[in-house]
Image 1 (cartoon, rainbow, N blue to C red):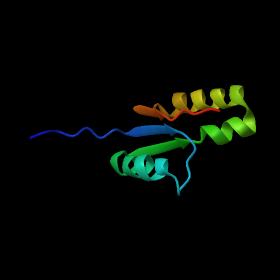
Image 2: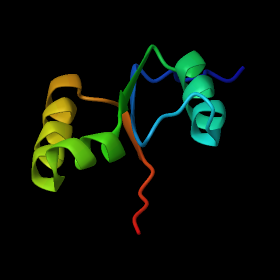
Image 3: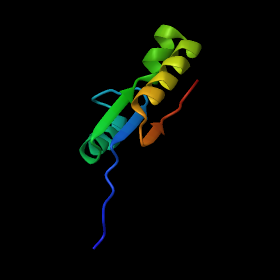
Image 4: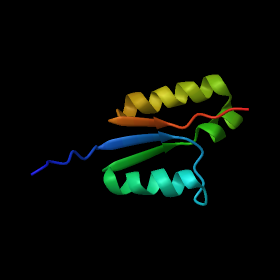
Length: 77
């Protein structure tokens, strides 16, 4: 019999909209799979705080939460 490994924490870094495909295809399944799913809205943080402050906050969350996996969805114009 196969043993399934269930990650404790998964960090998602992308713009989360409940009507978007990322929410439906990534967030919801990972929320069921993981004990804790953390969302970092990188687009919103970038627009409000700027790149440097966003990066510092992102690294702070990584150090504090210590996720097992990090999923980055990176886009730019």
